[in-house]
Length: 302
Ligand code: MN
Image 1 (cartoon, rainbow, N blue to C red):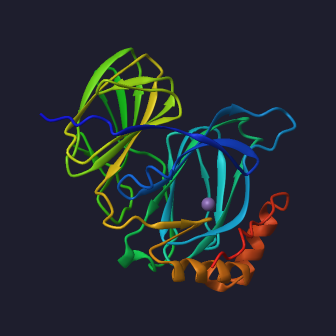
Image 2 (cartoon, rainbow, N blue to C red; image 1 turned 90 degrees about the vertical axis):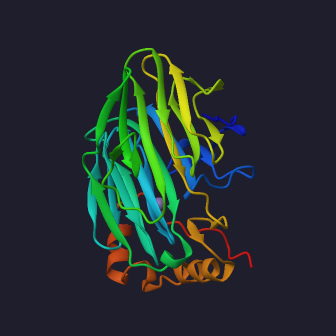
């Protein structure tokens, strides 16, 4: 079996989201996407003090993507301009398909839990799906299997013969590997996909490359397997997919396939256009977490 070397190991930078620091590893100049995955933020693990509010993300819009949230600790309330209200708890996925346009808020339920450990990723929609109707899906249970002391949860797509129910629009895979004991496991990959391994907790050695916490190893199309060695407690996120023919463009919270689409989205958000929910729904979102400011985004750059 051929196993091309990892082309790169990328270290996350720190960003602020809704009042808490997160490790952001996608996009970077050197790696804009892995398959359709175009954004990866890792929040926590953190325990909030008595006076902290946790994650409080005010109303903001999205287009042409799916926000994909994987929860490991804590509880977060999702609200959106469709009227969805959904608490996400550990081992669950929230998937918001923005399509043509949606706006939403996210807030820690600190009365329930002072902890937070989560990953939020964005999945770009292909050009012919850029304007589909927005929707929200919650997956309370994802398929779990065990192999060589590793607990594998399939989050989207098919992995090791197990398929997740998660809605997707292009060839993709996402899985979490949790080492319940120290050791090695060998996983079969789809060689048509490019892959990334992001370490959420601990460190691992994957195909001879060491990846530390908050580092992303990237493997090109043609990689047929991973042999991963780690200590007990190591938690790794595997993402992959068929490379996009043309990388999408990210501008603030918008994804798009051309600048005119992004410019219009920005102008319509500033104008509180109904593209991002009716006036009543947008007001309701703002009122739901009044202590978090709505985000206006940067000035239109073009
Ligand atoms: Mn968002």
